[in-house]
Image (cartoon, rainbow, N blue to C red; front, top):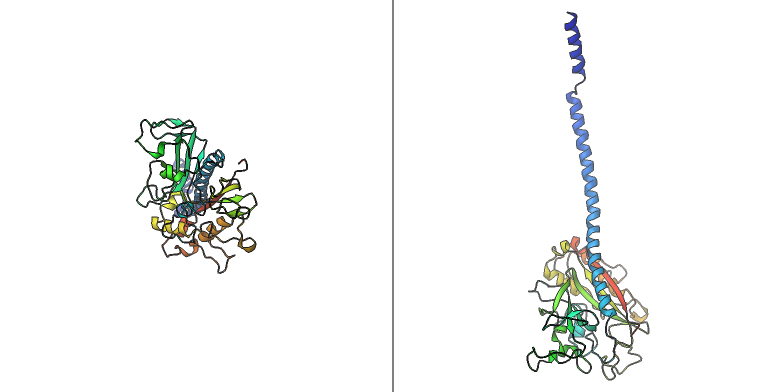
Length: 357
């Protein structure tokens, strides 16, 4: 009898150690609250990290492109007897292949600038594929809407020969292979049309180097301290019409070339229709039409980039205030642009010094 009572007491003791239904419900509620709290923390962290990753992506792309340009322009042949395919008032297709006559793209113009120079960087000779120490280097944004390279930055690195050109394997009377480099009065656009054919043509001499760059613009910092889209001092040389006439001057008045690019990450780019992205690029002023903030409207360093950021994000310093695409969700002509995608666009610039000219 005593053993049975002891067993019953032990059983009752073990029964008291179990969780009741109320305790289980309370535990489930607490666990659910903890899971909800952790989920909110993770979502908040993802919201912070996602834009940071996009910025890292655009930073990486911009840094690589600008470093490549630094090499090409740093080793550029700086002479007064060779040609440069750069923007200047006359003799070049559409303001040096850029849109320099107003904010919106006009008929016969391109949306971005184009440049081609001779540089002491490796390239490949077209006929043999052999490497050359001297190249004709060019940059452009492809504007052929049927191309897979549409609105992407392309680079050309056409290898040339120092000591004449072997024409044995070339078609007779082919002017593209009669000179190793172009000495004035010959022009790059006449000897190597691919360097100046405009961004509306698909050309095998170009390759995509900046798939996230959809806008490219450059300008000149002169030795007199002014910023301009004309590569010489117009006060000191009022009769100059090109870098070669009436006197061949090359880039002797240029202190540095300033480059501005607009970069978007791949995920955000996929959200913007191609037509809207083209229209957005066209909204970004050419250097000529971008307003200056200096005395008398003279441009200062950063004016062009400030204007582009104003197009994207708004600018309260102008009259009337510029709302920006991110606030309106559309371009100036009304094409839709997701604000979330616009928020990922970044503007970068760099100056490439030519002091050793």
